[in-house]
Length: 506
Image 1: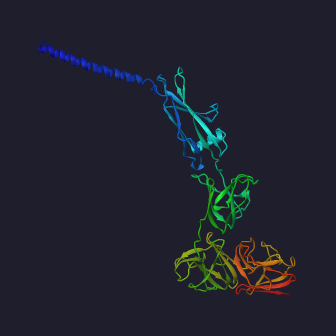
Image 2: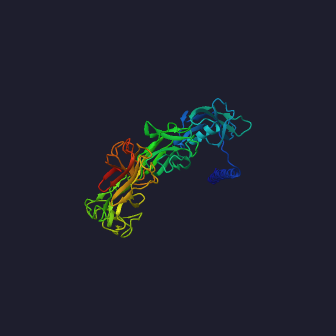
Image 3: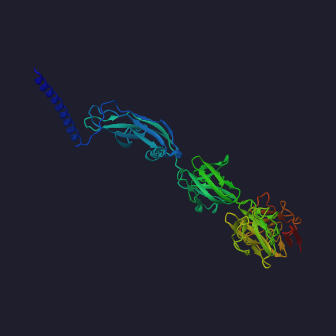
């Protein structure tokens, strides 16, 4: 073969290889185009029989973790028994020993190999679908069916797995605070609803004023008093007892003083936290001015009395003469602290609010006492309500030993003249051995100040006195008591300025 012949053969071989490449590329493009004409199916090749496993075999559910994952049910791919057919999965769950006669069915679909249940979801299945009593335990069985999408092949079913679950009873959606420390007392129909925490739905919060008294909680406003109540655990004031059908032993939490509180109740752990939310802005108040006994003495002025039942309330009582006064929160130098000033210059005594000024800044407004308005007054400051009350002091004899009886709402006042309070009338007319004390107020038993005896059943010949503001405890609530044969007409005088009392039989 000559050189020309060799070149022709070489060219022919190269053309033959190029033709083969282009032919293969053309066939591949035709195959891809054909594939795009129909849906591409996922198929599972022949393999092992399907099997199922659970991530846990024993669960105790708690509402505190309601959104958390409780359990995972995981299965293998399974086998399509060599058919090349896709597999769709079906999960069945039923009560143990029920042999899947009435299972709960989940159509899972293709290429998914796990089903998860949250704590809340699983608890609802137990107590709802399967009828398990809340708080009780049950054993659940599960299995997975490999549904082979080929009618000529029998579906594959996993061996069942079982797991035990203890359910929980969800706490109520509402909680109400009631008791003598609340606005409506034990009136359950008007009990105050607490605020449910959106992130912790088992916690409820009350923020507001509570009086001295007791509190407890109800899940309803049902006046049959037969529903769920939460009362104090006597072993620990920070713990509660859940009473399903009434008040149980009816132990309640004591609120020792009137204030603004934050009460947080955890119905799952049965815990309670009671905190004051508003501390008094000032711990001391002082009267200053020539109308008051202090005069213009900022170094050592007379102090207000802080209410033992409410740290935000201060009172001061004295005889006021013509002149002016204002109220300081400090002693020492005129510019050392805050002042409670009147709203306007020469403010009359009927004012019900005040302004706060800093040091020597701001208007130096003062209250004015005139010749006509001079007398003995009680000044009451409420720092929370930013209010002031300036009222003439009146005394009332209260008790079954006097003509008013135990009527605190509308008793007959003593006569005031020249700084002296006088009662003239019968003692012991209705009860010859009755008792009595003196109030500076009317309305409610805890609304003001008392003049009390200094010992229990104190003789009317003993005129020593003590003072208390609010509701005196039993161990301090001393009264004068008539002895046999002492009933009759009397004149009682009280000089509050000099703290002198006289009791004279007529």
